[in-house]
Length: 554
Image 1 (cartoon, helix red, strand yellow):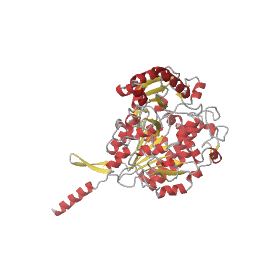
Image 2 (cartoon, one colour):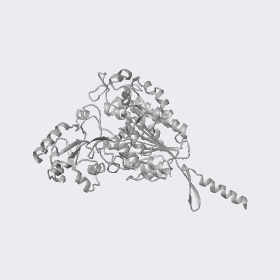
Image 3 (cartoon, rainbow, N blue to C red):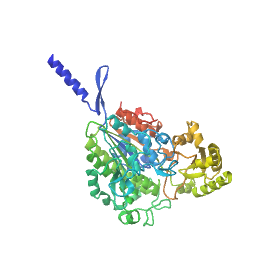
Image 4 (cartoon, rainbow, N blue to C red):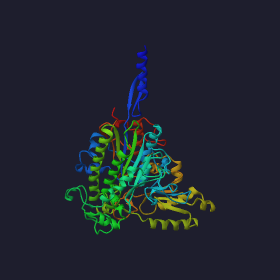
């Protein structure tokens, strides 16, 4: 009898000691093991259009993008369900499972009606820089109003599961990692070339980050950037010499090769690396160092690593969608993805981690290039719009200071001035809409009153409403004609609700993920609930997305 009691006691102890990554539950009184991944890795490739997967497919290796596409699950019709499609809102939406309407990150920068000035999505003057004396470290996630799935994982594990955020851009590191992250690290270039953080997370850099900075890894990439393969084989992009690309100061043409060491003097020192393929190389180096330095995926509690590749965005803005520079950057990024997956296999264990890859937005072809091939496109003149609108306001309402700010295609009214003049807010909003809709290249305009009182379920109106924060957004919201930008006549940009900006990759791979693909439409807000369901944790508190059950390995 004593032996039986001992056996039962040991069995109960064994079950109760099951870790989070291997949790016992009971179905019909029989134990069933829930085997969770040791590490979840979220990869965001900044400004990656979906067609970069297919357009450059034959140039990719078998172990990078192709591995994720062929052995993981490929959601081929994945879209953003709101505007504006910018970096800050994109990263926030991926990890919170909701849109700017709820998480509050309505742009990278926006006019704060309460403060009466522009604010930055990750800016926080109450914290200090760590790793530099520059104010580049004054960052935190405090302007993001909801939790990320990384936050929910931290809460679920009683803060035992780690969260680390990494990106060259501060907002690409800070927002995905959420409010409870152990740390977020971003790259400060200029004359330093260092990875830094803020006192929101910790008061000094950990030894592994200090050692990485001391290794002069950034310095090693100030070399010549040439195409990885013979440039004549880059048939998936336009000619290297054209009038649609920006290039670097100090070089007459935007053509390969680029002497980065020499050019760095006129291009903010180490900052030049951000706008080259080597910025992604450096980011991968740092991410691999983080696996060891933070011991990610090495215990029974699931850790989260958020990794954002920013250089793809800088290159795209500078050179444009159809450039040789973009093609080379993705060919080289594919090698980095392969290298990082190999590191995960070696350090965490093949089949012991789950990874997803997506993007924060796409990009439009350079409008001047589209014009050259007779596709409707062009550039908006914001200065002329403002002058015309101010003249209208003065004539119609007898005041020149009724508008506080025009930014992010939104018009912010001076509420105190309206009250002083006894003007009805909704009436003024409608009058502005009737006025600006007559301006060149404005396709649609909406009042904040309409966005806050009407439920839109289709079309661009739904996307605008999903990006509308009643407290933070403007009084009038403007939608430009397709492929019309407020931008230079070289390089690409983004921000619209059109397919070139909303259609981005979504690849799942690793533990718990099936091999397959779908053309069923998925939304960016579905990612966080999907990962939450995989981990068996609470969904982020503002999530509106649905778990993509078909990606799971049954």
